[in-house]
Length: 332
Image 1: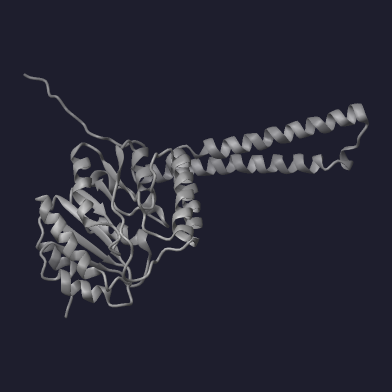
Image 2: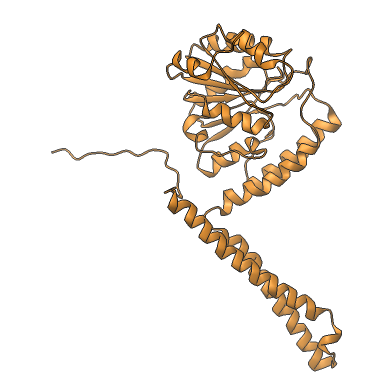
């Protein structure tokens, strides 16, 4: 059977109120039940919706199964990658090919419960921009999944200042105006709430059901934790210093130069009062290294400032984010 093209699917849709984005990777045994549960839950919401499935280079026939299941459904859209690019890329593609004013993401392994979707919509209707799921009773292995996740969530919350308990829960809802400008790389999809808060969005967390995996195998491993921590450094830098990199590089550079000068003063004191030769102390080498490092950091900060200014000015990207503009015209 020939799968429906993205173009033909787009013609069947006007702009829906709600888009469900689901990345799929080797979930051939789950896609039928997933789509059935999704449609049942979405129809109960009473809103115009679409489901966007992104096949992330599956090798088990997941896309063909999806094409048979979703093909007759006017609410479905399929996107297929040429190879496996990862969950973040799949989510980014799903956002790009969705049209809804509200975008809800969820996993394709049936561990997220589609029946929770109305709970997310209630919070969106209450005025929140981002609604993040919290797997309070998580149905995963304790040592390889729960413990690393709790450690990572604690570190992420402290570093980003976003008070969420479960950054790793894929099930989240976003207003389109918040999500459409976020550029995703690496494992960045879990940090979208942090990006949203940095632009002034309202973020709330709600408990969601989490079901045990009964079919297929998990694609997550403990090695992902280390990649997440590396991405966290990028998120912190982009969130706090993306428009003023000289602050971080310059501060570190001035600290190094300050310690270098202090070390040199210690050497002078030893020379005057203890008759200790500079060449006999390792502090001289330390002072020289710190001075060089400090100057290099200052130069890196200046170079980063030039790059940031080129980025914003060449693409005319603003350094602020508007919520709304109200123009009251004078009566004549």
